[in-house]
Image (cartoon, rainbow, N blue to C red; front, side, top):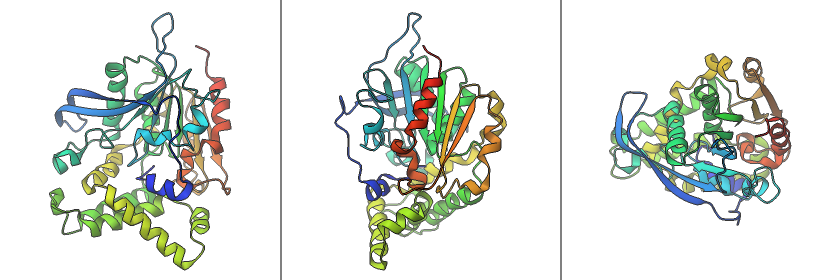
Length: 356
């Protein structure tokens, strides 16, 4: 998951926004009378998004050049406009050149400029799941942007898991799936333990007051953010960034202080709780879309020694799994946002998709 990782990525790689043929065109789509998988409803759900490029259709009216990229937990669509990401993929002559492709970057439900608990409902906001998030992505595309087909769904961390949901929920809607940094199965073990730690840290703070706090529950929130830092980082990176005791102390304290100023506790609870029903493992035989799944060996929450992904990938009709070895360039879980590392595999994958 990107897990509130903007601050962490700034510390690690200092990405800057790319001056592409536009920083993207922002927009808002409103889904009316949306019914959540829990049975709860809202009269309006807003999904904020950014697009780059121009939508094109074939002679039959099918949209053929649309790429949707889905961010991780705590992130936003605009995060993909960083030099490290967009600078490697979206420029002239690059794999997802915006003169050829129509790029859609949503802020997913509960995140960024989209509807979220901190807008006012707090803990009365519907207890959304990944299925709801994907349903709203589909509504944004079909109802909001008049897109009836996707060339590609890419996703990082939480977005990686959303890509797997797309594979069985809308198997004929997409030409290719590229899930980055996740596994197509339920979140258990260490992954679930850290999510529970994050939630319990927030809820145990007396200032949380069941979500109706008048001032942020900082003790619980900062404890949650510390767990999040470990969840999303990697030993080599930490060692390089903090080679002394003083540097290590300063690094984590600066990260926690910065992140706590921009994180709402209720939003954070919902970020992680949304994964509670995620488990595509029993649906993998329904995934007929070609898949390129990429993980990195230094990913703290998807470690290769679990040997989870390979047998699951074997159940998918057309799938390739790449496990990136640990190098000086990998960034643990955050390797998902470094196409300079895995871009060659994406290039090969795109070349295998049918011509349209």
